Length: 288
Image (cartoon, rainbow, N blue to C red; front, side, top):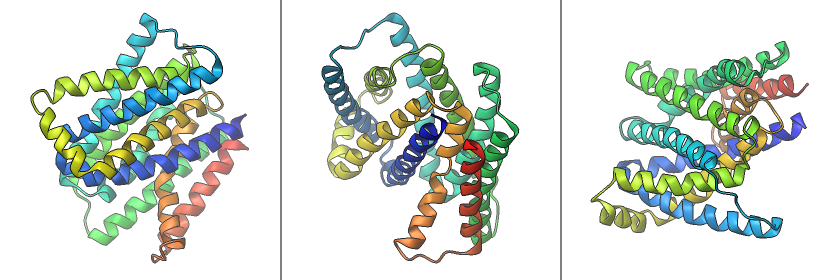
């Protein structure tokens, strides 16, 4: 079952890389655009959840526990999305994404032991660190290309990494320890998210609708990829320690870089090759 968890996490990583790249396009539009994304995402997720529940033959048992835990998760996700959106207004994806995704699994490995009691074997620790090193190698390539390492994007990356680690550990605890259904949990969270963003962008709804029309394709892509990425990761935590799921999800940048070289014929240098080898070795170390 550990292998299934890793496979689900890899699928989550691919979807995550795609929506993170797409969000760069909509970042200048500000919070009203995020409100529009939240509405479309919630409508889609609630519809899919209803279909799933009909197929299963039972509905969602809405309880105070489900509502309160979903509220906590939504607040953490909104904080992360807000940090990413603000950071991308001033810095490139390549300055923020690699370090934030590389640092987060290491933090999750520590919090997973404390909160969930998920102690990793030495081999699994090696896998987590190898994955962080792989992402760090791509950060090195970015720094080498730009010629300097700036403090502000590093600070933003660290804040985003801690935020990611926070909701990853929290959601892992909810699904693994509290036993809530991942789809129902996420669906309720999207509804709460709409309410939260509606409060945040109060008075700017017309601007949000305008941005939704301007960036209709991007909004649709985000509305599909964001829930796909995270629901896959929630199911992955049922089959693998949350720290391993986080580490595999951080591999998204490596697979995108490799695909760019193989599919788009972009130049592939020694750093990308080394990062890919490290990431592959990390996955092997995690599942052996």
